[in-house]
Structure formats: structure tokens, C-alpha cells
Image 1: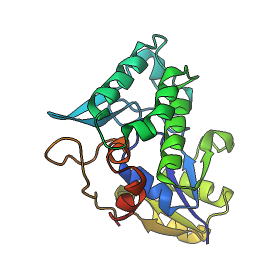
Image 2 (image 1 turned 60 degrees about the vertical axis):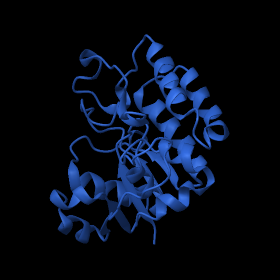
Image 3 (image 1 turned 90 degrees about the vertical axis):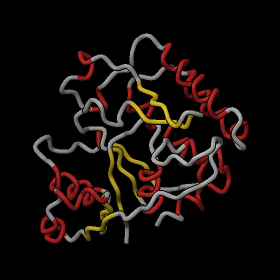
Length: 231
């Protein structure tokens, strides 16, 4: 039975998102969702000697107000990309597996991108390949979805379009998803139960819920095993 999971594009996504994708046959990037400031669509945290620090893409309000994520442009001044990459180099350069995995990510930061979602998608694709996760990736913006669909109706429609009999939701979905709509559509509703694993970090004292690059640069080829240990 095909399982699908769906999530908005996140910048430098954290382990919980990778776990959902790894458990699914199909992952749909919900790039048609409305962009929301101060979430994880344009920012995430990395490990530093002091604890953690935010890497935030400085998107002006005028460029993202009431826009779909797939329509949000990146700042015209690309100096933020250089700044973010230097921060990653500074704080992870001494990690065990940085030199092994960093070059492709460096290339992604050196490129110009047509928009926020495309850069986030490219980073995600690199992460999935580095972790060894082979799920199929699709974009909601290429599905001709009805603009009137919201919440459970939208997720059910996407699941049916990709031929999925099971939908894997994040744990927060228990608060708002209408289970009866999934039942009527013949789609089994499942919820993620993920417990953040502990692993080696470069600096003393473990900090969780960081960007997934933290695990990759520290544990390298063992990253997928560590990721799955949180189930």
C-alpha cells in the first residue's frame, strides 16, 4: 500500500521532516501553501559553541505578503547566501564528516535561485541523497489543485491523486485533521510518533531540533540509522 506524506518546503529542514519522508513512498512538497513569517519556511537553527544560532533568509514583507510559498522570491541581494555558507563552514568545518558532504551544499549556496521553494527543494534533495532516502518527491504546484480546498480536503485530494492508500501526518495533525474525511475517501490516516535521537555533536552539550545538516556532518554514513532510531 502506497503511503504519502505532505509538508511545506522548509529551509534546511530538521530531522522530523526527513523521518516522515523516509517512512513514505511519496513526499509532496506543499509549495502552494501560504507563506507564513517567523516559521521554518525561511529559517532554521545550526549548532554553535554557544548553543545554537538562527540562519534566516531576509525576505521583505512586501515580497511575501499573502503569497504562496512557490511564488515567494529570494532577496535580490545574494550576500545572505555567502553569509549563511560562511556560518555553516565556521561552525561545522571541524565536524567529522564535513569535508565529505559539504561540497555539493557549497555549490547550492553559490547558485542563484528563481525562488525560495526551489532552493529549499534543492537542499532537501541533496539531504535525502546524502542520507540515502529514496522516496519520490512531487510538487503540489504541479497538480492543478482546486484553490478552494483546505486542510483535510486538500490532503485527501493529494493522496488520491498520487494513488496513496495511507497518509502520514505529523503529530500536530491530531489537533485539526478530520479523520472521517479520510475514512470516506478510503485513505488510512496515520500519525508520526518521532522522538529526537541523541548523537555526537562537535561541541559539548547536546542540542536537539537543529537543521538536519547537524546530524549529517557529525555522523556521516551512520546518519540514516540515527534518524530511524527515533521511531
